[in-house]
Amino acid sequence: AVYSSQMTDQLSYKINPASRFTSYQEVPDENMGRESMQLYSTGLHKLNIDGTPILDNDGRLQNVYENRHVETNARLFTGWWYNARRGNVEDKDISPISKYDTMTIVPHWHDLSPKQDLNEGWVGDRFPLCADLPPKHFLKKGA
Image (tube, rainbow, N blue to C red; front, side, top):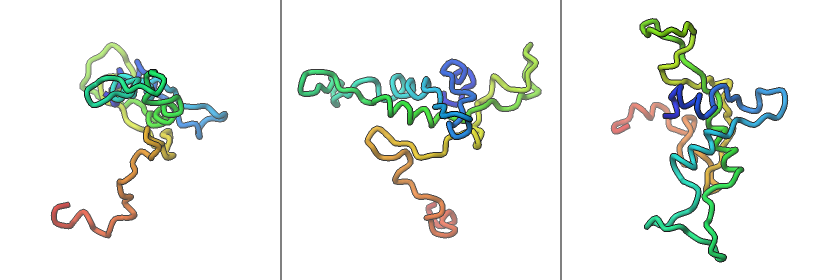
């Protein structure tokens, strides 16, 4: 769903540049960052394994995330743009971009800085960097 051109229109993360490419300290649009957590993954409140809400000592619901998490998550959704229009699609819209095909990431628009996860770790932690792998590791049996 993230690659859908219709979803980028609805949740406003197309043409969502990383802040390092703007002349002022602009932050990426937070709409998809928030909706991806609220609607598609974690929800608003922490839950027990049986689905009942986790309450704090005062009996209040505990939030899963704060706005700083939304800001970080929004940086994941930077740099998206349309693919080129295919010649085999009939449409009244004469446009060089495709509204039917999946979106693509424009690398120089994407925020490449580290992003913190909900547990104060980093997105992508525990995955080795290509530079840290042994030479020709992909040629080994079972790779």
